[in-house]
View 1 (cartoon, helix red, strand yellow):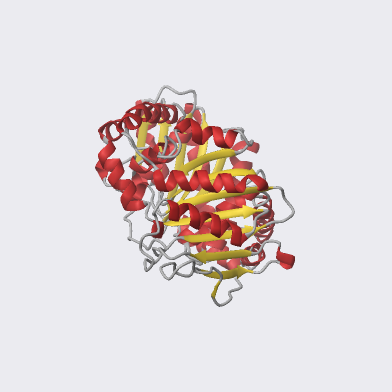
View 2: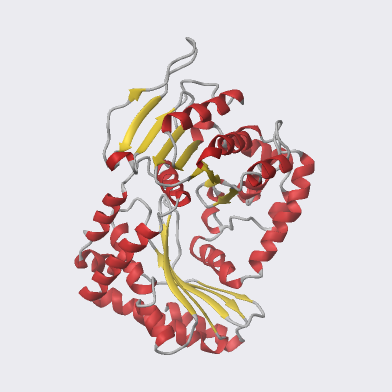
Length: 459
């Protein structure tokens, strides 16, 4: 990461208009890939990455709020609010919002996670001012009318039902509950039927005012853009809404750790009349700030990250026991998860679990071969670059980096970190993570005797 000292770039229009601070965080060759950051009076951060070779731009606003910020009774409020911000402002109706982007062929959406929420629009570079105006209006001027809350409740309940109809998706929510129990990280992002039905417009409005202050927001924009113009347009939109009222306010710091308690050796079975049994076998992983995350990424890739990975070869290619089998990692501010997913016929579930557990135990004891590690490093480096070849991915990278880490890392630095991972580091993290007693989540039509044997997989 290349840092330069802050310099003033905005000219005050009056004595009351405070000066923004701008930094060049990453200096790209010929301006390509240059990342700049401006912090406005009032605590709003604006981060951009310039890519002059494209004709598109993606604009997003990241909010420092996710489902882990909810109490038990508010479970689902963050996601509910995400829906409601599309329902209208004092300036635009819900139809106006969607029609504005449709009229220029743009794409607009949002997503809610456990520790953040993001709203974004991807448009032609010439239509970026429109995208900025619409998204900023949504974030600062949502009305959250009671009739909209009532209407959208039905849509969210349908979304919950859709998720529950997809056991391959639902099993990951079950695994989070298995690992974290009844706390915010263990509860579903969508909420439950009961919590969503209990949420009122008044409670959601209070949640909105608390968590959508400019100090909790990061604006991110990537593509064929000019940083200074983006800053002027965003500042004008927020000032028009009266959202930058306190010029002395400072941005909220990245989320710190809470030492979340995780379980081990626990088994949860959700009986469903499905054609397959869906399983996740896993254990505590690493927090997203852990220096060992680069070695963990290599380990995860070698274990279940592709067609040449151990789990894919052992479970699918050699034995044909599953069509989909993979491993994954999830990193949060204070903790993480490592999991292995497989979908298989109910009669094969114990064979699949035995093979997965054997592979994890073997790698924990003996590590991976140098060839496996070298192949995983190459695969991870390639997928990292290929995954950043559009403006949406670039916007996600710089927005999340600012919100979650408070800093930026260039692609070259990321590739260097991956390439620098040593076999000893991979073997060390394998012992630490895979050597723990796992937990297990299963969704499927298992019979009593099959269910009774599930504990063998975590013994």
